[in-house]
Image 1 (cartoon, helix red, strand yellow):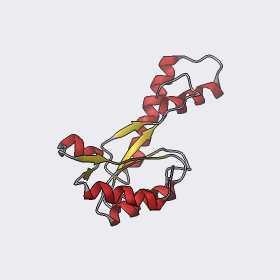
Image 2 (tube, helix red, strand yellow):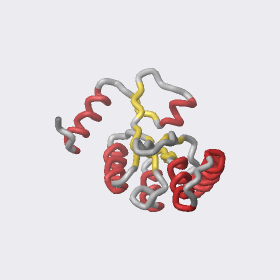
Image 3 (cartoon, rainbow, N blue to C red):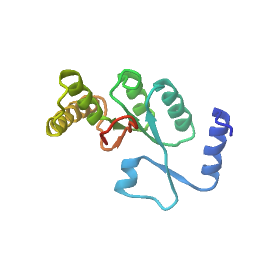
Image 4 (cartoon, rainbow, N blue to C red):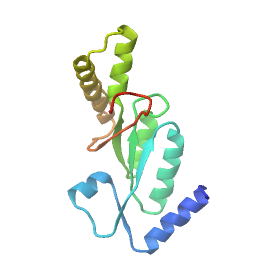
Length: 152
């Protein structure tokens, strides 16, 4: 399998030539097209790679949605703003049950699920508000953790 940038560009070109339109996730929810591609990019660890992909897409007149986690390897105000300026949607890639449960595991060996849920909601609201300082986030997607007993 060839996962190079060159092959990615060829794929996008072929989709455009085949008559596909590209929409962000929120555009699709508001009014879906007939022959549509939704490009979703989860920004987990390599935020500069996500910026590069956003630049390639913008150069072809294509929009996508980039979902950012609120961890240092993903969250970067400057990268978020640059991607948004290129015309792409920014979304929240949340993992707040994991974040909340890890806080409780450090503080206490007795986990109370109601306390974890309450903390996860607080973290979610705080992180979403922080992300919305840079972009009017409308969509979210879950970041999974197969090692956690919690489903985000």
